[in-house]
Image (cartoon, rainbow, N blue to C red; front, side, top):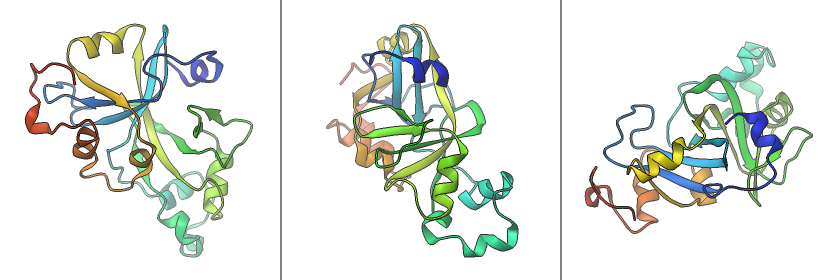
Amino acid sequence: MSLLTLKNRRERGFFDGQFLIAMPGMEDRNFARTVIYICAHSDAGAMGFVINRPQSLTFTDVLLHLDMIKQEDSIVLPKRAREFPIQTGGPVESGRGFVLHSDDYSSDSSIPVSDDICLTATLDIVRAISKGDGPTRATMLLGYSSWSAGQLESEVVNNGWLTCPANEELIFDRSLDDKYERALAGMGVTAAMLSAEAGHA
């Protein structure tokens, strides 16, 4: 599923607003021990973002790469901008940035993905954040995760993922190291309780 499909969708699918939590038997290294927030799901496929993978780039690096600031100006960025989190959202279009954010910020290009969360993938939100403005809660993700028609359903049936309703607190939580364990704990399970052959929680 593409960003265009997300923007043009008419109704929400079964996995919309869900977390995918990788099972221990996940063979794809891109997704081992990941928690993914599904933004869109339909008969055409699914799209979402890994929310527990760090990214070596900083927000200052992004601004410099986009020529939005000069190196000497980076020290005068607002603290909120300097500390703005960047994560790895998935293997698709890994050089492209997306901002998941609370709905107190909106532009013409913002796409609602739930009642409280929006997605914006244009420079206007980057500029707002660089000035210390922008949404109250947000994270930038480089790349996204995508499934073709029927692929995600098949992976869930074949015990690749656990699914549960997404938790907004966890989406924007900046502590990534134990987010996988905390997502599982929200379902009342631990990684030690799971195996590649386990049933669905």
